[in-house]
Length: 306
Ligand SMILES: [Zn+2]
Image (cartoon, rainbow, N blue to C red):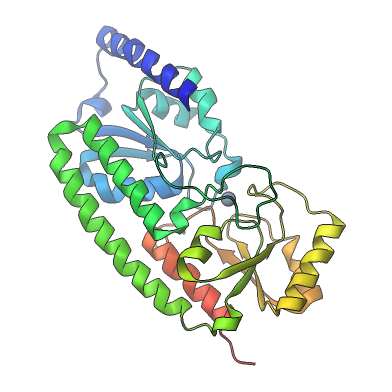
């Protein structure tokens, strides 16, 4: 992170010089704060906080895998034009580093700074921390406060408006948290166990009283390959603990999970929102909508009779 900040600080000066020499273009002079957000979650949060004050470009679209994202030429242009870049950190948007070295002129803020991180639910001892912090309401609200502070610092005239928006948004998230908890509480206590496709739900599980019993893909990324031994061990966990469903995600291939569910004779849910949010209009395009959509799918698979 230190290196990125240094680069960003050095290029603020260069960017100012370029802007002075070339004159602004129309898009930059409409009075709005030009912001780039790396992940779909940060984009959703910034939209709620910034409203019309912010010209926002989100880089990772809904439905894409943040772990595997590659910025397009348009993304690189947006990064160069931005006054503020909001990034996630924790290994989820390391692909941004190369683009910053190419000459970003913006202030770069890592919106998870200061948030208490946990190892992945099924930590393999790699030392990496679980990046999926937006799945926990308290940590999501900490991201919101960090984003609001970053917007206020970049656009001090509107600081009070960002602060007001943050308070209102936190209240919305609190209400959604209570609704999400009510849905999870409908699952009989001894059935609140998930096997997930990749290990994206540790914070969600801990926040709402679920247990992550296993994951098909080892580690916190979406890319590792399980060995035959890993898979056999997971099958044992599912059988011994009476886990009722395997939960895969809208963005991560369920090709490994599907045969496992078949062998174990359990349900597979293949469209949870782990790394992504829903497409616009899905109801899960917001953080709060995503928690609720996931809770309904989880309860639907775990709370069934039998
Ligand atoms: Zn992930």
